[in-house]
Amino acid sequence: MTIYDITWPLDELTPVYPGNPSFERVEKKGQTSVHSRISFGTHSGTHVDAPKHVLEGGVPIDALPLDVFIGLCRVIDVAGVEGSVKIFDLEQYNIQKGERILLKTKNSERGHAEWYDDYIYLDGDAADWLAAKEIALFGIDYLSVKQRGGADNRAHTALLQNGIGIIEGLDFSQVSAGEYELICLPLNIKNADGAPARAVLLKR
Ligand SMILES: [Zn+2]
Image 1: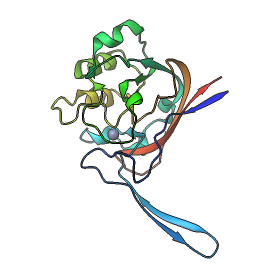
Image 2 (image 1 turned 180 degrees about the vertical axis):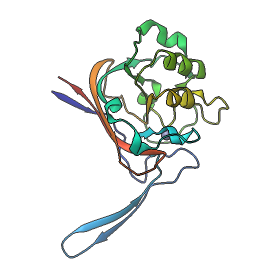
Image 3 (image 1 turned 45 degrees about the horizontal axis):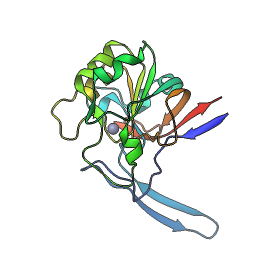
């Protein structure tokens, strides 16, 4: 079995969505042990968005069903796409109800060494289209599913309103398109709007 770690490493250098809290750490050395205080935003690095993030009365991260984030998934390579991923870019993949769909875009190639505004995101119509297909989960390889500063919030709302899990900040640079098993477990933070997660793909 091969394990692909598709998680961004989290530290002071990890890019942060503008306006979100930065990563901070204070390391305290005792006589026989080290224990640190670490603080970071709920949408830091590889993370899961809870409906509470964008929906009034939406459920928090600790209320999300874990089976959405564990199981068969499909990595779809749309690295040729510029700007946003549209219905046109996804139509050919015969996406089925209940699928976990992870998009490998140009973001993975560009990496996560620094923040950039013009990341590839999910178009609002495409979000509606995926919601209508009743997929189980959607993942993308930068810090937001929607355009930076864009008025169209459907990339978040269409998915979260329909119980579709969202993972942001994935790294597919070492992964090619295909079927895998996904394990992505967000930290169990009570009443949180999102939480960092460790995400891996398994290939048996
Ligand atoms: Zn988020």
